Amino acid sequence: MALFYQIATEYNQLMSTFSYLSSALMRVHPAWQSVLSSAVIQQQLLTIDAVLCQQAALGKVIYPPSPLIFNALSGIAPAEVKVVILGQDPYHGPGQAMGLSFSVPAGVRIPPSLRNMYKELAADLAVPVAVSGDLSAWAQQGVLLLNSVLTVEQEQAGSHGKLGWQKISDALIDAVNLQNPGCVFLLWGNWAHSKADYIDQQRHLVLKAAHPSPLSASRGFHGCRHFSQANSWLLAQGRTTLDWDLTKIKT
Image (cartoon, rainbow, N blue to C red; front, side, top):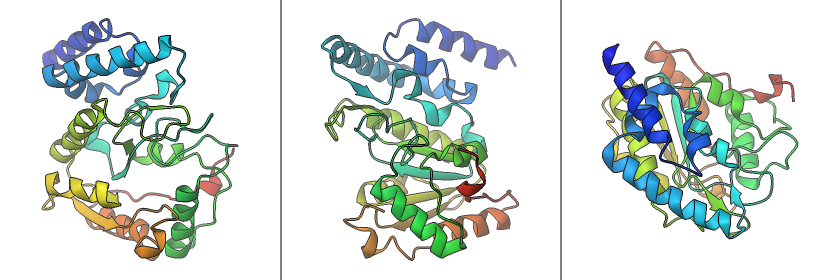
């Protein structure tokens, strides 16, 4: 308990040193605080914070909105994660990015990659295709929807790829790898596949497939059956399975 209060105190002190990222850091689940307040990660975050402040001052529009940058970490601890779905960087169109990989707010047109995910889900588990692209219900059940790069400039895909976000997301993945009793990593696309070497595959299940983008989905994403495989493995480990059906959620 004393350690918990020490970490919380240090984290609160940390937040006071940030500007652009402060509102996002305030929403992080306490169990991630020790990761984000470590010396190396803190310094990297301060560097990113300074760049984002400069860009905002120049009038550049940054997505997702600043309070949602760490949205994936807001409701779940590393030890509670059941499935990790890794993305690359946020959507760069107005109103799309919400801090959860592949997810868009209800009412926003469903992006092609997510539409292909829904098609695979329907083929795999006969789940009806959702009309909303909001994946918050998955996050609430224990799906960590994490992008490697957590911000992007409006209409400039990949524009923040060199800010150093990868060091942060790698540390978050490592926290799940070390603290979680056993979860499923869904690695889609070559970039995500590169993370497999850092995951303890004696304790966790790693499933690889092509990226769900229309450019590659036909080369191994469609037919991968990752959603049913994830539930089967979780059940075998004595963990509760996921209800992937988003049509039950009122939008």
